[in-house]
Image (cartoon, rainbow over all chains, first blue to last red; front, side, top):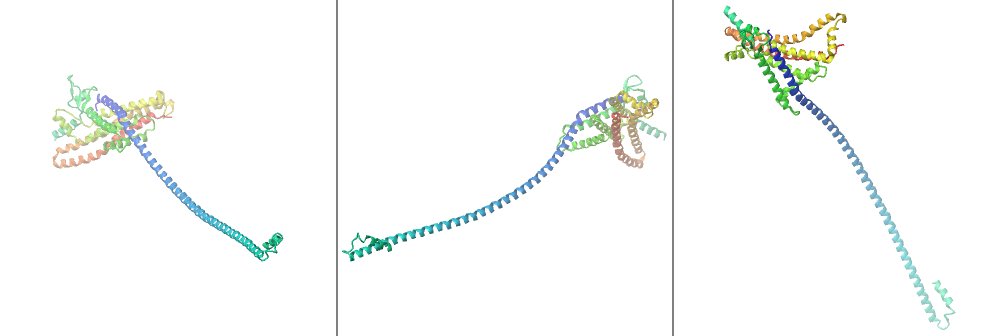
Amino acid sequence: MNFNATLIGQSITFIFFVWFCMKFVWPPIMNALETRKKQIADGLAAADRGKHELELAAKKAGDNMRDAKAQAAEVIAQAEKRAAQIIEEAKVAAKEEGDRQLAAAQANIAQETNRARESLREQVAGLAVAGAEKILRREVNAQTHAELLGQLKAEL
Amino acid sequence: MATESHSSGEYIKHHLQNLTYGQLPDGTWGFAHGAAEAKSMGFWAINVDSMLFSIGLGLLFLLLFRMAAKKATTGIPSGLQNFVEWIIEFIDGSVRGSFSHQNAMVAPLALTVFMWVFLMNLMDLFPVDWFPYAATLSGVPHLKIVPSTDPNVTFGLSLSIFFLVLYYSVKMKGAGGFFSELAFQPFPKFLFPVNLLLEGVGLIAKPISLALRLFGNMYAGEMIFILIALMFGGGWVLAVFGGALQWAWAVFHILIITLQAFIFMTLTIVYLDMAHAEHH
């Protein structure tokens, strides 16, 4: 064991190596390690978040589907109800219209009957007067017997 | 027998001698031939093999990790990046486990210590004769390829860490705080010389034990490899046995070199943590 200047040379070399390692070796590799660690953590977190979001989306989709079904059922029910109502209204309207037309026709018929009866009555009265005039040409004065003729006409 | 033991002694000595460059006894500068010559060079000599291999291995580590750092993506990591990230996460975990303060320097320091010590220890797994033999052929008298079997290397590391410990102790607690930590515990204040002695020894023991542990383990491991290698010259039965032993010891050594690197790193972190901690 004889000591010599190798001791000093080794110390200087050692200090240089440590300095180099500290400056150019350790930081880049450590950075890469840290960054990768962070990336992996972020990736895992993102995956978790994605899964969670997927679950939420699936739940939301199910809810939407259920709502849509319910709405569709409601719409169909309403439509059916409305259709029934329309049919009912149409029936009522048709019945009313039919009744109205019937009544109108009946009134028309009655009116026509009355008119026919009236004209018939006048014609019969005319005919009776004409027949009576013919029979009683001389004796009957139209002026004196006007009252009688009117009475006769009313009785017909 | 005498010549054989002499030659095995020579063999071992040859393998344990660093390639030292310094002032030779005759006044010229050059490589030392033998331990005595290396010792006579005094402090102002340098172990060229330790320096070359440790710097080379350190640069290999930095280059490899810098390559991965440059191409670091936050996406799927490639093979090299994967490997580097695995080590960095391991170091980061160790630092988080043992160091409870804020200091951006500790983790890179721990990484450098671990990888550098590990690579230096790893050189121990090369068969002990390859490199020295090749060196001898090319005219280099000695070559030790495992820098961590050179106490200069381990003490260079541990003393640097020790100065960091002192620096952060003073920075975090102030000079007075650091002194009171050394002088006013564990015994009451009036016994401060005893306290100072105890705590001072404890403080000095940190870098020394840190360096000696690594050096001792690696030196002993190297020594056993050398002793096993000696068996290859003792007939084919011994050679086969030696081969099996070398394989077994190398397998066991994989554990030791990793463990020693890990211990060195962990103690570095712990010492720095203690330097940051406030004592009450």
